[in-house]
Length: 514
Image (cartoon, rainbow, N blue to C red; front, side, top):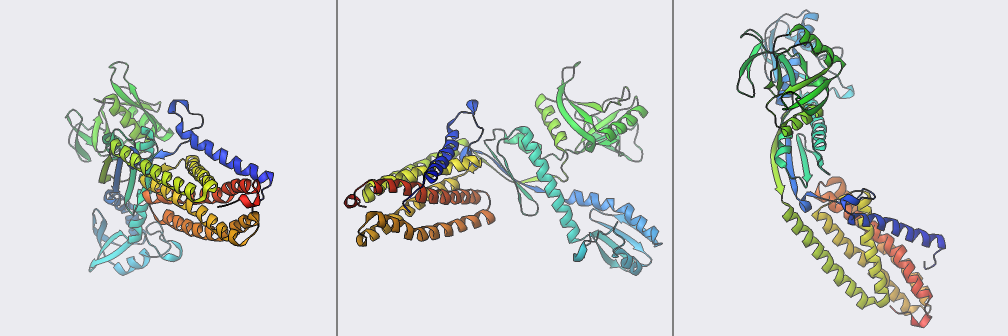
């Protein structure tokens, strides 16, 4: 156990030097970055915003149930089923039918997959059928159908929220799913939480519709930004789905901020056809049900490029372009919880954590020197190396350090010392019976290995379970604790053992005491 080959010694110190190098990267300034890796501070340490968002899938359910009207009517006609009083509600379709038994039999058949997607062996149908009264049926989404809609909307919302936050330039955001309908957003170091709230609160549903001359069928009244009331056709000329890019810009004539956009091939064709057929008319640009602007069509626009003008500030134009680039949210997002942590509170947490670490560290060092003399110094060097390696591994992973993470580091200090104490006490027992100090140290390390491994592996299992089933700060604690256990075993059984072997092998048999 005390003999090391040259290659083993080389590998031990090579690993120590490389990981220590990554640890030192945290000391460099942002202007002089050599390798762009560092440990990031969490929300509780550097301040920032915490938002808990919830999707409202009701509008999406309404939209999807309305999309079923035409397929179901075609289904009724195809199977020669007479119906009447067809009513479309927010969550269901209600109608009278002459032969409800025949409808139900065909409705739940595998072949009619246009209306009812059949999923393998689970018999999971998208729609549900209910008899309200004689010859009166109600079609609505089943629990499976609602769950499918909700899950798809949640995943899409998380992706769009991520795009919007990344576009703002927020560093190291945390965006996670919470439950069936909620999204957790943590934004460390955020200086303008209101802007993010405004960006996330908009669904960004964009469409282009023609302004009608009078109140006629298929027209609704909307208000522009400057308070003008316009009759707008319900027919959508083009939607935001056809946008491929949007950027803030300035109008060369008025020098006012605008948003320039470009369309895909299909969108350019639609836009070109609509502007060619309606020269002289006004085109309303509508965002989330409100008219942003309604310019006149002076000439056909066939290039696939356009411009949205309004009474924007440059910041508003930038945010609008960001919203259009990131895409529309499938459902509205509601802020159900909001917390803001100030940087002063985070600084206090860091100072408290550092003080706790320093005090505990000094007490441990003094105890080890008093108890084990020169071997205590070796244990202390291994302890310092352990902390440096822990920070180095966190740097390589670009982990986010939170207050529970600091607690994990402090706990690592205690566990690292515990490993050396177990080894040295075992060696003491062997020195009482063994004549050869070298043999006593060798047996001590061998016999203590099982105890040290058992103690650390059981703790590592607990850390893994915490990481799998925990969330947020609990994961941070589990990560630092788990990495700390691995670095502890490395420094105790490789680094400290090698240094101990140097001392024992270079002293006379009678001079070795512990």
